[in-house]
Image 1 (cartoon, rainbow over the protein chains, first blue to last red):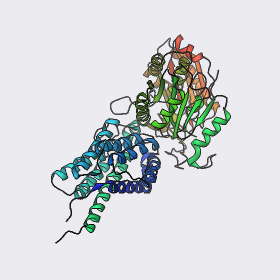
Image 2 (tube, rainbow over the protein chains, first blue to last red):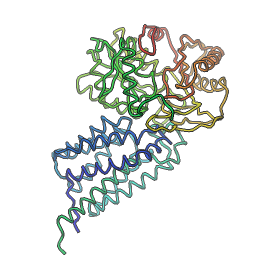
Image 3 (cartoon, rainbow over the protein chains, first blue to last red):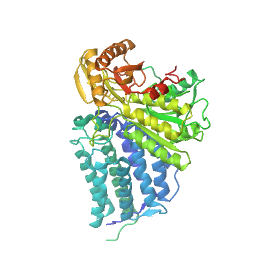
Image 4 (tube, rainbow over the protein chains, first blue to last red):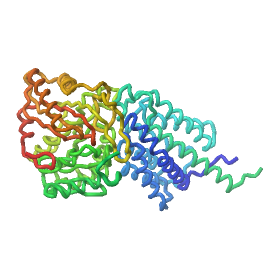
Length: 227
Length: 331
């Protein structure tokens, strides 16, 4: 079994393309979740941003991962608007700062970069766990990812564990009362609805797990392991 | 969905183009990034007053660009805050060397985007101050919310800061006046019908024939409380007394008062509300010094109204009375 995957530009671009596909596929669902407790634009805004990311990445050729993440972050910052633009933008800009000058990330570096990005989201939005935001999906994911790597899991297995944690975190937002963002204006009426930000954040982690595990399998095919 | 539009994805740009053609003597528009700017910007030595937010609230903000009010407005997509890129471009377009003031409504998206824009402007050597508007008494102001929403008082802040900037006051002075406005004003709104975001095509919430929503914001979001439909005077009682008690407006105080339509309510009904509001002010000993009745901060085609009241002194009244020439406000 090959446990190491080369986290390089192609894998990260694959991550973004998968994320763009999922956002576009789930555009109506995200907007419907937002209509229940927000202002019915999350799917529309994220789709607009990710379509632009997809367009820019189609001809992207720089190996430097710092530059790649910065391009993604600035694109979301300038195209999405709302709260999601600055928050997702900050996530990728911070991942970029953590990846400057590198054309490949080790498993630990990838986990650290993702954690730095999630930390940026928490700071920018001053949201904590339990506020019914994207942090409720992202934070359990990065914590679980690091724990799994510490337990010597492969990056693919660790990301699968992170994906499960993000999914649980997303579902855990249903009974929460929002205390950040527009949903907080509803008071107790926000209870009973899944948070749209946590839902798109789950799609982000799901896409990362798929891209990394797909690359792991591709590596396994490209470099068959004896025995 | 039945709307007077062409393509849902072009509504903001087509409306901006129409605004520019209709008011070519007052303003011009810039696309990619999108902003509306006073025809004579930048004016040397004058503080640039900039606001912005999601579209769908017309005439706010673009309809208030012109002499004595906003130097620029940054319209985002429907109900979605503008991006930092738009705000920075508008700041460059209006900066006459005296710095720029951002008037920001308290929504997470608006704050994040204007904060990032302020950081970028300062990096580029433009001095920036921000005034936060959070006047909606329907929202409990507590640790458990993102704070009160910015609604009708935004118009008052734009008018008064615009007048102070026109008179040549410094950035710090204009910002201080804006903060005074923010402290002294309160608003509350209600809806009879929801609104439909063009790209969504469905109402953002549903109300039965005999229901209304009290404590709505301006984005088609549901309010805090749904109740059976009441008469205009009873609705006015709820909105006005919540506002009176919150500031509070004391016996002997003087106020500027706005009864604002949400986009789909006839002016006749707004005057019915104003009539009772004036009676309530009389009973409480609150003197209405100036008033506005009409559609100033809307929520697309939503039916309903909001009331905004600001306690004023002679200085604020002077800024309010200063000449203004914009598409939606002029005297």
